[in-house]
Image 1 (cartoon, rainbow, N blue to C red):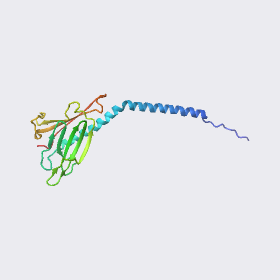
Image 2 (cartoon, rainbow, N blue to C red; image 1 turned 120 degrees about the horizontal axis):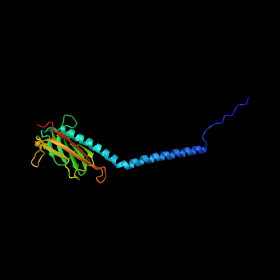
Image 3 (tube, helix red, strand yellow; image 1 turned 135 degrees about the horizontal axis):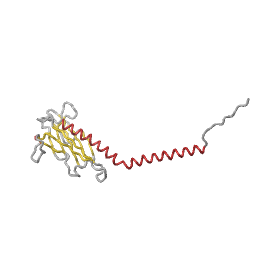
Image 4 (cartoon, one colour; image 1 turned 90 degrees about the vertical axis):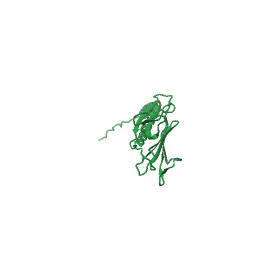
Length: 200
């Protein structure tokens, strides 16, 4: 009995080349559309990232302000109150010692510096910080003529030139974030505030 030959079905070389070419063209088109989307939205994505980064920094700042307390040497909690700089004592790492903390906006960079108490009796050497953090490099407050820190007394009145650190009971923080001031979508304003819980 003679066996029947069943012809094997498959793709010819020409069909393989056509399918490969079509697949390559489709993948190229998809890749180009994704790259174009990222190129056209690169600024928005970068701006969103910096806003989120700055938001975390402002949250940390407000948390530290709320925990403001008397220094290990008995100094009043708020030590320095300026338009773009604030210095105060706070137990930011929840240990047995109170740190001196400075937040400062210099040009467009908002940074945090921490100084630990040393010795007995405790002293604070502010000539060199023990830790430094960059919270944002795109804060435009000075360019827009806007303060970073606002200070208020127990009656809610904003601090004046004659106010002292011992008068302050409430602090408002404001940051204008924009990685490129001449482009849209423009600046993003972050605002938060805190009362001094541990101040009598």
